[in-house]
Length: 318
Image 1 (cartoon, rainbow, N blue to C red):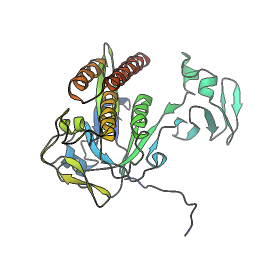
Image 2 (cartoon, rainbow, N blue to C red; image 1 turned 90 degrees about the vertical axis):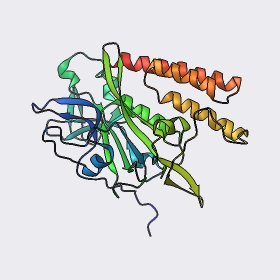
Image 3 (tube, one colour; image 1 turned 45 degrees about the vertical axis):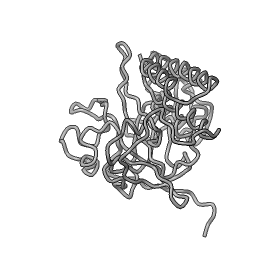
Image 4 (cartoon, rainbow, N blue to C red; image 1 turned 135 degrees about the vertical axis):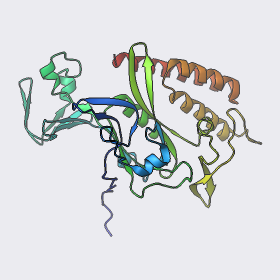
């Protein structure tokens, strides 16, 4: 058996799951829910998801088939031509040209690589409409299985392919998944939220482990999935009771458990999408989480950092 093989993950081929569609005039239109029904004809693209989550789901319980982030997540910058031919791919530092192209008088040969031309030529900042057509856009792809929230069973043996062009959603999802060393089999809640700040509004994708006590509260149906440990493996079972935020189990006083409370608090803050929500959750954490004075200061610092990120993000989307 070969050792140096590449891992191939085949996804459901019916369609990508997005948060937008092209209307009858062919113009793109965003939604604050995941599109699993043809928005023009009403045809159910994924009938099993409609049955489990409704016609306009704002969240899914998902898991991943690999511990390697590169197997399940990608957010390269890409540029496509009029015939949907890929012209260029970029990781934000180095561009690779798929076909010959000329941009702002500079010629690039197919198969060559060079410093990111969007950065070098200022394509992200330019107001020139013709030049702006040569700008790459972020393409987020996420491959994951989806659970039935009632039974805790996987709905499809093949993973679904989620797709978005939001660089902010890509950053938010990467920030969470990159912190978790063992992704395989762990249930997460993938959700979409419409963020409104003044006259600016945009959709932000988020992902958080459902094993957080704070997250379990927001998903506390009698049969919501819960992680259990058994024979060294993690699996889903049906649950009827959840620990309240701030409640601690008996004998919960070890350093590792205290660290877990801190990590849970920080992840909870990072999952908020408005300045108001961050401040509210920070106050809640200070009142209910069993944290030391030093840890509370760390939570406060993270909250201020995340508020700055939210405000900077809103400014960038104006």
